[in-house]
Length: 115
Length: 112
Image (cartoon, rainbow over all chains, first blue to last red; front, top):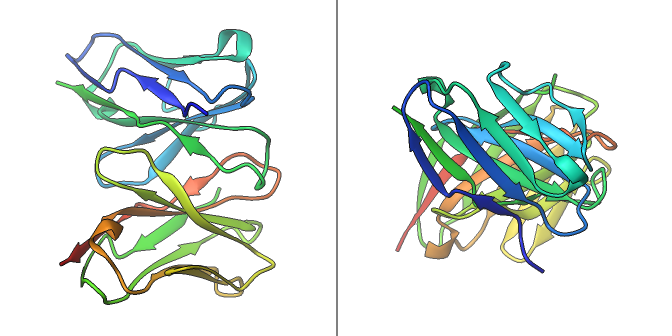
């Protein structure tokens, strides 16, 4: 099966610009997650979709971040306007069911650099 | 919320030696503890997991142990090989909840 795909793999933008990251989960996976890893720190939870609904967005840093999953398929994460501290690797993950019987399948990540 | 601490942040071992990575968690309700391996430039991948009703689990050269009382869990890699070089993340979550909390990662280098 095709894995979780993310686009772009790298993005370099200036402070104040807008960037949109895209994630295509594994087909049939209702659960979609966004995570972020800032250099040397933990992979930090941002939010969780079940189909098109936001199940948990407690990890979203602030209102400059907007995630959508229209139609319950792919998801986008928009950062507007970007700040220096937004730099990091943004991972998307999906799982088929909830709970421990469905491990997370990660994408390769998008490395975002804000200059 | 849950807090997961992971040590060491970097670890270098000679090929053939063992490597141990340790994690602690704060939420006594956590009952699922996966470990992910991220090779350079690649995605994190699940390598082994353990549930709170089990104290130890092995899969070939890797093993995980869990001490619920102390809220400690560890990853043990025996007979390390160069291809074991990667960043390893421990994590914790509660059954029925989707939010997985990760540690800060351990960069393991196996020296040939």
